[in-house]
Image (tube, each protein chain N blue to C red):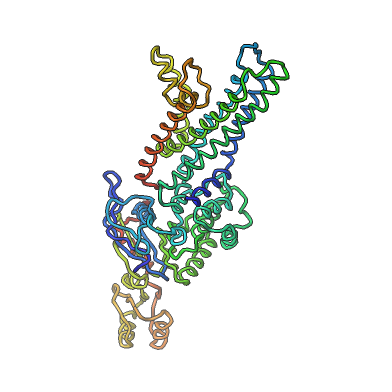
Length: 299
Length: 247
């Protein structure tokens, strides 16, 4: 049984179809990225999964149960959602203690988590004065209170600086490494490319792809692009060596299955003249635009 | 339920707003009762003790506000999300808030009325004015204020669940009690009904401070107020169970 199973979920707000017959699953031990442009229905889907928004149709379950039927919700699922989740006048420590009391978690665990997310120094300050990064970390600490096996994070990297994003990435890696299922939504491709094992792409409330990240990248091509007057001759030699070579325009080829260095050795050995040798495009981004039908403009 | 209740009691005592409402309202009652007891002119026939204890009734409005805040604040700051993640059963969450509000409201009402009695009555006797009320009356007034505050806080929880908007709920409730009900109360022939059966009137009845010659009595008044609280709570729970919590 998958940790998270979203099956045929539909949500209608008035005349707007926010989520349209969406299905996907999330397995334990994996980081699954939930990817889509702003307004694609990611947040709505996650809130349906967590029992906060009522679905118009379909089911969303965690360990086979809807969120509301979980016996120990905080000990089963941890969630970090977008938006203010804290009373600005309450300290970070007291915010955590409030949730801990409702979940039957000890105050000692609260202190442990404040250390873990590096907030111990600011724990007794009012949360209203926290930076965006500190709020995200407090949200993460809240999610981890019950040491849950399933984590759901909505745009957790929003507002984090590069250092914070790196910290978060390593942190999520560790959590997945411990066998937890991690579902993390994002509209930032670069973030996903370095973090996720599996990708679910949605657009206009519909799932447009679910695949391992490597498969999705492969589908888009990737490989190395080589251009120059002798490109065709190089292509022949590489092909003879077993590489996958495509002609890309008049004086360029696209090579798969060979690293830049390997191609360079063939070039040197053959005394071939080239003008360009580079990885082919920002492929994940291209496939993202292709899949979601998003334009380059602001969305 | 005990976990949810313990979380609610904790949340209530860890914001400045709660303390500002509680301490501010008690401070106001103490200030006014000291001024009234020292400067008021009472004749022997006056029921001075009762008049002074009526001042404690001021905290009933603050108890109502406390009840509204218990739930509307959660929507205002988005803390309803972590609260519901920890307690997904919305009925249970509202009931935990209800018990919390009943406790907080009762303590507020008791503290205000008891302080009022402890401060004002000695001042009266020092001035040889006499309380004009026996101790049973005084105790009934203190208990009445306690009950009225607890019920008003409970009503506030229902109202907060129903309206969700903190400012709207507070302005609506106070506007009703200060403007709408007093205006209805001056309609000839209708005034008696309003002062007995409408929420503000019922709370005066419950507190034992009704100005009517033939009051309902404290217990019937309390039951009327409890019925209003129950109505708003049921409506609030029905509405909140259906709501999409999206922020």
